[in-house]
Each structure stands twice: as structure tokens, then as C-alpha cells.
Image (cartoon, rainbow, N blue to C red):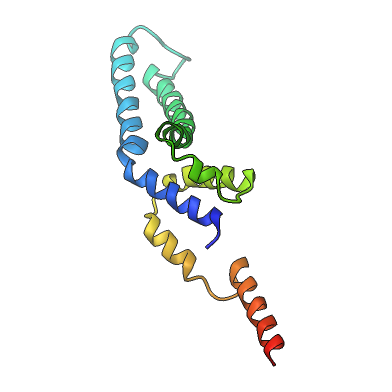
Length: 150
């Protein structure tokens, strides 16, 4: 197994372990903002003619929560690894910076898809032969070995 899928799987599992922080807390925070601001300002403020303040507020709160947590989910893993001292295990293997970046980025996006990491990983590992680069590498290596031995 190469480093990129392993790091990606590790990060997806981490995001699922803290699923309340990545999903529940932003929803709760957004609902609290909505209740407080809609209750306090709904009668006093009209954003546009024909648009209530609550209708105006909901899209902004949704975008605020998404943007804030998109950054927080991916950066918290790096900061946590740095503080605990195990970032060395991420930087030590021969991974290109693009692979590390891609694994963290895809893991942060994967949590939003709603799939469990074990089902996703099982589907990825049971891909038909020839569909992944690694299976192609293994088959070409084994064919070279068979040519050499014969």
C-alpha cells in the first residue's frame, strides 16, 4: 500500500471519530445564531423589500458554517499532529507535498459525502483488476518476473 491512500484513510477515520465536532457542532452553532439573531432583529430589520430577515440570514449562516469548518477540519489535524509530536510520521515517509496536501484535502471533503470510511475503503480495495495504477504495476512486475524466470 502506498503512502497517499494510507494517509487519506487515516484522516477519513479521524474525521469520523470526531464526527460530532465536524457535523454536530456547526449545525448547533448555526441554529443558535439563527435563533438569537432572528429573534432579536427580525422585527426591526428588513433586508430587502419582500424578504424577511430570517430568509436573508439563513444562506449567510450556512455559508459561514461551511467555510469555517472546511478550514477547521483540515487544519486541526495538522495542528494536533504537531502538538502531539507525531507529525514526524507524516513527514518522514517519501510522500510528495502534493500527496500530503491531496490526502488532507480529500479527507476533509470525504466527511461531507456521508459514506462510512470502511465501506469506502472496502470498495476501493475491491476494485476490479486493472482499474488502479497499483494493480497495473503489480501485473507488469509479475510479468517481468515470469519472463526472467523462463
